[in-house]
Length: 469
Image (cartoon, rainbow, N blue to C red; front, side, top):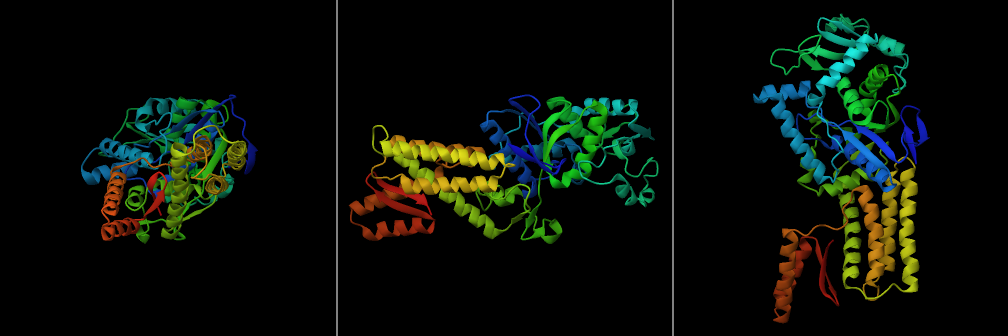
């Protein structure tokens, strides 16, 4: 498997630190409101990378944090007249609901920044002792100039960066020894949550939080660190600096970053009125549609969100589900007995799609091409598995191949029956009764009403079947 490594700027062969195991850290959201669809992209993408690694036999220790202390959280708490902790806990719960809706599996560990403060104080103390950090009036800063590799991850020249900060002293940060030095610890302001430290009653800087959580739950050096491309600088660059200097070893061997999500070819912004939360999308679409939409492009490619593209993703998901439902029906009601020789050969062809899928995912987690393989398998199933004479065993083998690929992508190919399904079944039964009573007008009306809801009826030898159009 090859991964495009932001650090090296080319595809590197993936070799884990420990054979058979992968340590993976993904920066999670700051929980001050409902997550938006920009937050959803890395969640979906890197959940899929994790699923694929596990499919390939790796044991993955997957850590994704919640930033539960931040200026935005404090601002929201003040506006509502509640504690920052109440705001953070509320939106962690809501975030987990949205993750479940998108079929994003829970991380091995979801650490909270506020529960890791002692480790942050310890790492900051180590950086001071090693001469990489200094304290001024209760604030602790990291000395970027002392880390010779600063800028390597973001491929920025430190002198060019410094030239862009000439007017920084005007902003009240004159106490910094260098304009590029960043905060590790800052004193509290009135009404803010705080923790005691050797330097001041205050709270950690954002960057130190992820360094400490990655170290505690994954180790000094980790295999994969991932997140959105907006985090490369300064967040991930600063993580590299402080972790490497504190621990004395490289921080992460592979860096993966997903590209931005735009709305109708424009940057998502509340001021432009094109800002959508995951909850907004859930009002109009099954969140499986959002997931398939996200995976239909390569994670390093900018992704444009639009109603037209979501409708296309919905139609694509429906195609997968129709094929899966038909295969499941034949697996239950098809011919008994072992597969014929011809079916056994075709079943092997179906399994071969898994190998093709793996080839695409081995090439830097290319979900766009992997999704195409799924549709190739759907076409294969529709062409080669027949309702009238295929065996149950043959249909089951093809369905298992389809389910394997869908599970890696986090796509659920067969919908769980719910109250809506029960209503449809009741209407079908009512229509059948109307037909027995030769009440053709009522039978036709029920069929037309169902069709208007996108439900297509099929008459088979096992009775009436239905599917979404």
